[in-house]
Length: 246
Image (cartoon, helix red, strand yellow):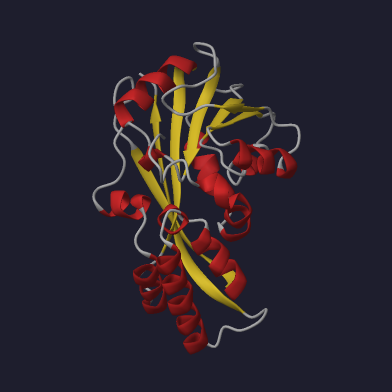
């Protein structure tokens, strides 16, 4: 997580928290299913504001630690998920001892990492038989207005990676298993603007580009009749992947 886009999110941490969707509990359960019985120590890497951390924290007897390179994101995480230990670090450089956790999960994050270096480092901190879980919430662009929204905002690195065949992992992990869930999120005009403002392309864009995106989004929302506190159903596909440490 070293390039400008990958490390940009702290500048819009509050919009990230307000605009990004939560993670489905059943997707998290599926990712963690291969963990050995009694194994409960989980590291949320690239944890951001704690969207995935708060779901993990509800798992029975879970001991969760949250890791992110950005102190602004971790500050919000500490406020929204109090009691979870937080550390600065990345998938390629984890502040954890060898063989110290039973699972490592990344939400909306693997597309920012070096998959070989991250696989090696995660393999170091996982106990034998430990689980690597990767998950993304992706807008379902089979819906016409959602496709138009993406055209206005510009496609994300995650969307490009998943459309191009999905994530890859390296030793000591074997092939990835995949599962998906379709669902809808009622969302307001203000939340859609927050979601857009939290995207790396927009955070790092010029002022003119930001103004264009906001103007065209407002034109789209006016067409949809999305005003004030009204909401529209934004369709999502949650795509989750898992692999067991060999």
